[in-house]
Length: 332
Ligand SMILES: CC(C)(COP(=O)(O)OP(=O)(O)OC[C@H]1O[C@@H](n2cnc3c(N)ncnc32)[C@H](O)[C@@H]1OP(=O)(O)O)[C@@H](O)C(=O)NCCC(=O)NCCS
Image 1: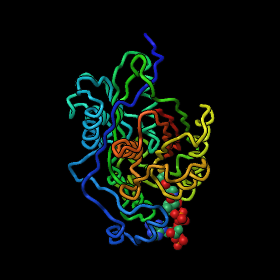
Image 2: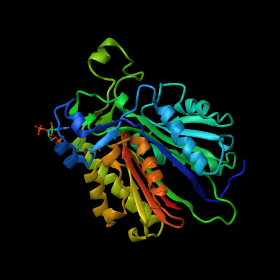
Image 3: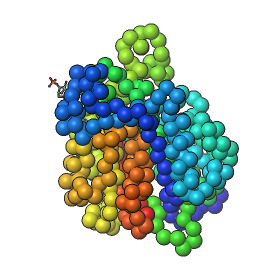
Image 4: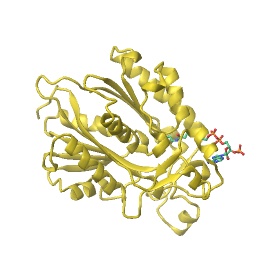
């Protein structure tokens, strides 16, 4: 086995969001809520909702096509697909296998990785490890979620927060003499707090039954206040640690791409990192929290809007169910 020491580059990015928009106003007709409550508490104005035909795999495949094109590659160049999702098309086979066949990427080995909203950073680090073995040349990483399928549309404390969408990137080793690439990762997890944010039903602990359906076990459950406190603490810690460990100062970061869960969490992060909010890329007003898709959608939009340029140092930082969290430093 050969092990490579060159850094891993993000060669191209892509994203896809469904065309159906669900505004806060629309939501106020479904549950007892208001645009004012949702916007002031979260910063969300609207979110996208997938159609019946649109699934985690189809949205992931659309995002992937754009990422592969942006990388200047074809599907035949992709030798691994990793999908990060907590709303797979089905428990098995993996959503990555379903994406593979939709793309026609027959040479790719496929797997899913589940780290909830931190999923994209986890799959980026996994992809980096695989690339460093020297056995894979181009790994397609996809964060995709159809969260509307696991939301309880009678629970106003959760259904207003999330949306559907997908983001993707192609990762490969830097060429000889090529500058930039992923500098470092810092991932973490704390399973003792699993029940702060979870979906109890559908696995082997509570398989589908009449009673599990009556008890609404097949929907996402969350203790919002507690999640909020953990999110601010661990995201700030992960971000501060990775910047310091790499001998950088926060003011050297051109752009921060945070998991888009809640504007107040992002503002708290901005204060703790001493990085002005203007340097954060934000789109949660348009999409809400799209879990594993949130960072790759934001990254793709930032790149296409010219907000991330060659040589820029950027920070990606996320938090999610598990609990899980993570940060990544990248030189573009
Ligand atoms: C969910 C969240 C916005 C709630 O805000 P909060 O200020 O903590 O609000 P609380 O849960 O304490 O609820 C306050 C009141 O608003 C009510 N409320 C909850 N959701 C509501 C909604 N959509 N519309 C109107 N009122 C609502 C509650 O019932 C409660 O009413 P009460 O005081 O009469 O009991 C906030 O806790 C949060 O953002 N947490 C993090 C969630 C997150 O990001 N999760 C994903 C992580 S990846």
